[in-house]
Length: 200
Length: 200
DNA sequence: ACATTTGTTAACCATTTGGTTAAACCATTT
DNA sequence: AAATGGTTTAACCAAATGGTTAACAAATGT
View 1 (cartoon, rainbow over the protein chains, first blue to last red):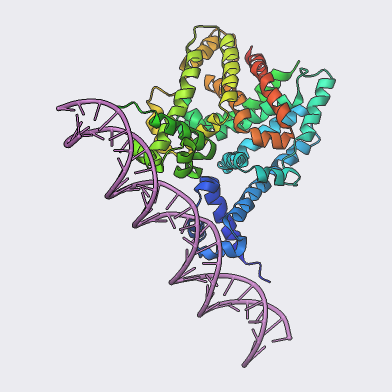
View 2: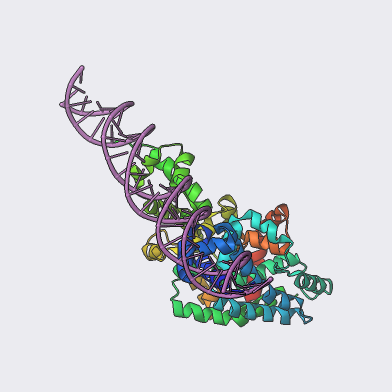
């Protein structure tokens, strides 16, 4: 029984290609080239394109979810949690720029996979965060709005600047270097303004 | 010289298919079937897949940009403009649910098209909005932050719930009907909280 | 050392897919 | 009604693409 790093290097290559081109745009040969192995190996280890793709999509969740869930579960003040979440999420995505777009796009096109991951441990789970919003509302500390709306806002402010980067740069006429700087600024700015907008 | 509605029905079919499946996932035959015409007609009117695709992407901007630019250019109070923008954008996207995801995804994968549309009249242009933010800052009415960050926030809050719908429903465990209700709520909620977060 | 399993390769295959062509169709002009 | 020119169709084509196979190499167990 060999652990064989071939399987891992296939997966790595597949991650690179799939995250950049998506399921429909990726080519098996391109993945094989990227991994510098024979195309037949892809099928030997992962049977077919769909299964290789699902392994990649699952690994994307595996990368993202623990990182988020740790922060969601921390026993700290809500505001501090918001600050930590935005800052560390932005840092993480700066290292994995294709991740959110890839996940979102493929989730939109693979309803079956959505069901598959629904009960899977790799799912990000912001329930603790939701409960903290509820508690603060109950304590009269923040506006009485749906906690889900709060989390929606927080996710939108944090994730969209990455997903919509090309569109935003185009529409707002922002050069690359400046955009990078804006993203850095957002590591503190989001939490600051978000907290400001909910405090009663 | 015939005006021939064939060309238009091809474009309509192409819009349907491309917006749902993207450039890489769409099939010429599928578009022909959708339009109920012979596949050769696609090439007769649009030469090849790339050109048909670009016509579709351009038409997507054509649908979106005027709708936004009218509001951006209105001579009204900043806060009122924000309220109008979020409300009417959400209404519009509810009618065209695939639009933002399609535009964002394809822009990310077609750097050449980005250049092409940069100087095109179909580009959404929030410059008037940016200037109003600047004016309010100068007047000491809102926090002294980069106006671009403000617009980034506004776009994120408005657009992301559509682009990331599947992911958000999955992660926050929200059923379809409830999510629709949340989106409706956001037509007023976004502006309310956004304004609350920037007023000095 | 030998046999058996596991890993790897090159060649091959069937289907899909974007694109072409030549003939037919149809409206308008002469 | 014959000619003209744009429009439409079915059949076809070459390349790309996902997937398979059979032979070969390298470990692994006996």
